[in-house]
Length: 138
Image (cartoon, rainbow, N blue to C red):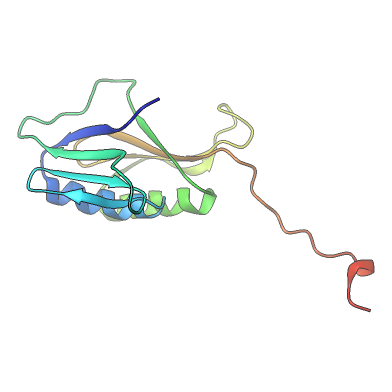
């Protein structure tokens, strides 16, 4: 449905540092950059998310946030930790959100410009089942 989304930012360098760290945890990296923009996507793909330097940048109003898909819960945890380390503000630590669904695991951050971002994994966590004694080597 969507091709890409862009955020206006006041400092491309500072915001790039935050999103480099946070999005790396989700398997995304810089796929292009120039003096006024940084694009993020999967390796060797077009950007799906872009930062654009704008001197009058401001986040959208209440109710808007961007949720990035995570491959697992560990990636959600890593996204949150990396974003906080790079100057983002916590807006909800990693954890289950049962009001959104039985397996909705997410973390919420406010970036340097006030944009609300989330990483979410909606699958059931895989658990390892120990082998039964009958299935061992004999």
